[in-house]
Image 1 (cartoon, rainbow, N blue to C red):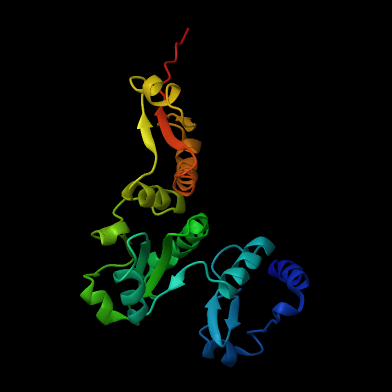
Image 2 (cartoon, helix red, strand yellow):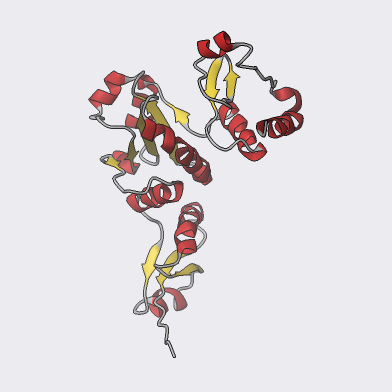
Length: 251
């Protein structure tokens, strides 16, 4: 009963773009079982007859985001042929992140929201693509790629370099994003106290400097945006990151 007000709120906002309905599974038990509904509430969005099961809290905001993700998927779903053309035959200026997964894998299901979040974060980049391969459908491809556990998150970098797997413990969107940028060549110059004056003050070109501290969480989250600015504005100004050490005196 707590879901209905949220459901109606989303229906009112979206209007005629999506049709909303409810089914009483006590009165229509056979129908619910035929579509594998065994717990309540279960929310499914049918898009071109393909069922998409909602995972998360039934708030208006999350339901809206769910509908938007189904209609405009943030993650690129690759077939074996598309993987060969887009990933293996990628241009030297492109990088691909691929999630090899299986629909029955519980870890994959838990990871999916963070991977979608990663895809949305990476929209700032036009050269890094976030994708997935369903290994239950493309099992020959996954075997050929040496994928034996799920999910396997693999980065195919620039210059057709060798692929690398994500092996860190944290599988959240920000950790994955830091891993991606940390694995790719950087356009940002690391500067310290020894070369700050010679590199920056006596250079005729303008420099955009990012002063950061290694323990600063906001700095780590900002770093990918700074990297994107550096890549886009290469011909306009120099880019640098200054490693700032702060000494704190406790009285």
